[in-house]
Image 1 (cartoon, rainbow, N blue to C red):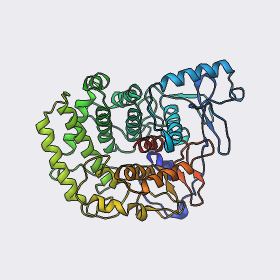
Image 2 (image 1 turned 30 degrees about the horizontal axis):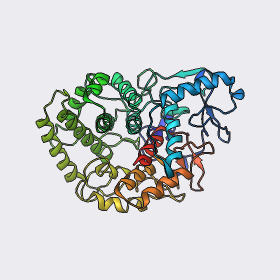
Image 3 (image 1 turned 135 degrees about the vertical axis):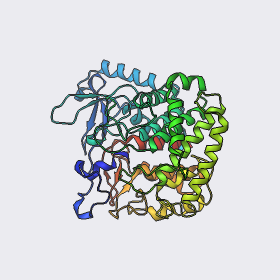
Image 4 (image 1 turned 60 degrees about the vertical axis):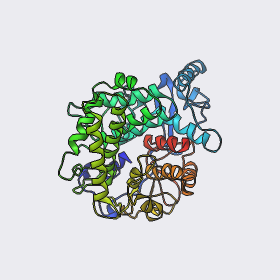
Length: 433
């Protein structure tokens, strides 16, 4: 839910929990996207519909979108080249994965028609993943982008994935830190603090690519000094008395004074990925023995801080979706986490059938699709019945054009922006599992 803070309205960063009466009910902000004239990505207003060319977000009838059939067909050829070699699941989840991938690619490096009063376009550079096509979601979050890279790699679109990670690398500062989010020019749009988890997710995504068969040489060529900078940053973050990073905002997008599992776990995952890269021969500026020792130390520290309750915060049991980060497919199970995972969905469930970000999230009846998709992927990998069920729930709660929204209201209707890049990426990963 990287853009979840937007739902608090622009001026309330720093107020983590407003009274429910002050929060307007979420509403649908977009139905989806369509590729229009000159390849520009246009937003479908709520209630608007379009028939797509199969395997694209191009309109079957190009005339209403400022194109003639020849231009549409040329854009269709580009889309096909971009997806050439993609390995998508067949059978039950094939169509869902295909449409999620279509949206994910549409949001990666788009020329996005501006929905502001001034008109014009927002021209995102290659590899920059817009979190969603409207309003305050038209930024790049390192967390979302890293998951998008992992999803693209999982279906064999390695150059697309490297482009996403290469864009993040180009915006990383010399200390290896990443901002909470970026404009299309690579600058932070506001004064919100950095979010530590982004560095861990970046390296985790690199590790996923290595596991998918991308060579160390190709990773080093595409990412350059990013690998060593990120490793150095992860080591620095855990060079503390507790061997845990300091408190930081995470995917809840609220200020935190106490360390969350949503920050600690990605840092551990990043270190584990760095260890895998070092063992494979990558030059990270730290030898495998040092990284192996740090990984073991940090795993113990995470267990010491969060087990047995595996709650959102250190030594608490307010479970949230981050519990999946300490289990497969993210890492080897940490002590006691599977037991907490067993009833996590029940503790986080909402009336429409999805989940809230956590058990301590406000009781507004809203389901959030990124967290539901995280639990779906986790459930599929762990062999839990709820994995396919949650994936089916996501499939049945898309917009009328097949886009995955950020939220689903208690009555089952979509809300927030659609498509959401993070959810689209997670659905690709879950369907492929």
